Image 1 (cartoon, rainbow, N blue to C red):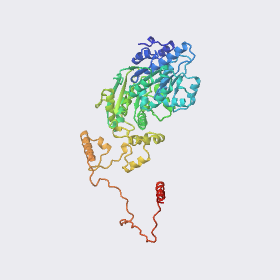
Image 2: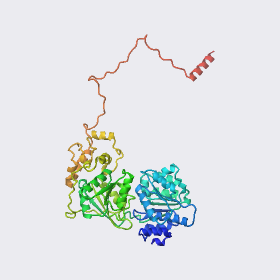
Image 3: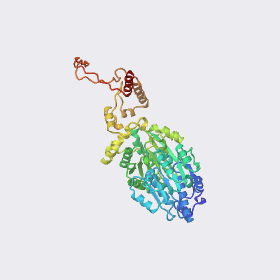
Image 4: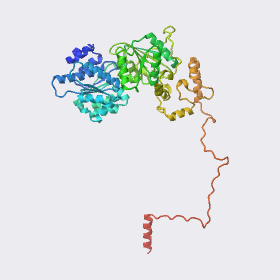
Amino acid sequence: MKFEELALSKPILDGIADLGFTDCTEVQSKVLPISLAGKDVMVQSKTGSGKTAVYLLTILQDYVKAKEEGKSSLPKALVVAPTRELAVQIEEDAKNFAKHIDGIVIGCFYGGVGYEKQEAVLDKGCDLFVCTPGRILDFQKSHKIDFRQFDIFVVDEADRLFDMGFYPDIQKMFGLLRDQKERQTMLFSATLGTKVQNLAWQYMNEPEEVAIHPEEVTVKSITQELYHVAKSDKFGLFLQVLTKEKPESCLIFTNMKSTCIEVAKRLTLNGFPTSYLMGDMPQSKRLRTIDEMKEGKIKYLVATDVAARGLQIDDLAMVVNYDIPEDYESYVHRIGRTARAGKSGKAITFADEEYVYGLEGIEDYIKMKIPVIWPQEGDLPVVEDKTKDMKFRDLVSPKEYAGHSTDREEDYRGRGRGGRPSSRSRGGNRSSARRGERRGGNDAPRGERKPRPVVGHPRKSYAEIQNMPLEQRLAYYKQEYQEESQPMNAEQKIQPKRRPQKSGQPKQAKKPVVMPNAEQPLPPKQKKGFFSWLFGRKKKQEGK
């Protein structure tokens, strides 16, 4: 279906033509005829399918139609997104589509920045509100925004909002809106789980459900590759792959902020100028980094999952999972940054011994096995790592090291087997550091950990285990786990603590003090109760 076949006004079609779009994607051709008719929709669609244009074109068409009919009050719309980056991207797309529409005011409301500019947009009379939940509810609490004014309400990336803990906020927003029959509601999600369906049943007006290839979670045009590698050799292999592929643009994902900084610094020193993007950066710097990446000024960008959604880069050639994500859905959103709008792309994943445990959940979710690449000698170019002998503190500035050196250790310390977060130690406070000292200093980073003594044989260091052949390594693990699982003998059992005596002599029991008869204290008088006094008085009267 072409956009010209839809019931869209000329200013909107002109904006679509300026962007170079002529044909609708599958989700657009199926949902736009329903949404343009004013009906509620609940859409399940994978990342990069073009669903943002569905609700933006619907909102803009409703505004233009009301303006052409000469209505005194023009319709207003609210779009809720999970992250600031996605909200900014939606605002940019909306302004591109509305380039030929006169008078419309589009505003973006998110936290991390001041209120002055956003309040100025409110004073102008905003028509399309794009927001994150926290900031828009702040404006509502201060009575600067009335939710009853909205004619269209859109929840984008609903599953991500709920994963981030915004489910109560979304419910509150629905409660502040007008009745469900007096507004149009559109809900978009990669998965239609129980929470999404509950919202549709409770707050939407008989929504039509549209699922675009729910069995295909990832885009077919993405070429996926997987490399199994030891953690100590991962960056060297990454350099070889990057030298061979030579992508025009590359987005690299890590699980920890410290790893994000470290990989960016190592790539820069090896001749690949790289920037990084993560959650605790100032919002202005984050937006500037994203803009430079879109404009092509930044060729390589290392990011945490904060950029997995909302970062839309045209013609992104490659996505690299330097660390396998702990959440299987994050894998889909990461690689979905490439091959957007029907284009092709490549996704490369490195599986090391720390995060390989997340691979099974990812493959079960995407319903396919990621093709494994076993490079032979000569397949990859020989590349010298200029930062091989450099540690984290040698790569970063003192300010960066002070801010992320403890985070580097705490991120590791808070993980159980397989890189899973531990529920006990997430903060890494002073008491946990003391506990680590009592255990022998095992709260240091993996490369600096001291081996703990094991009954029967000394524990091997991490480097020694990695250099073992596979059979010898399995035999070592078997022996170690067998010894740890054996019951403790009498010498190893913990005896109950006893308070030590001050002197070497045994403690003698105190003898009771017997007082002479003359000095014997009299027994205390017992105070009579009310009933004893009453019945005693009656007896006296009867005796008389």
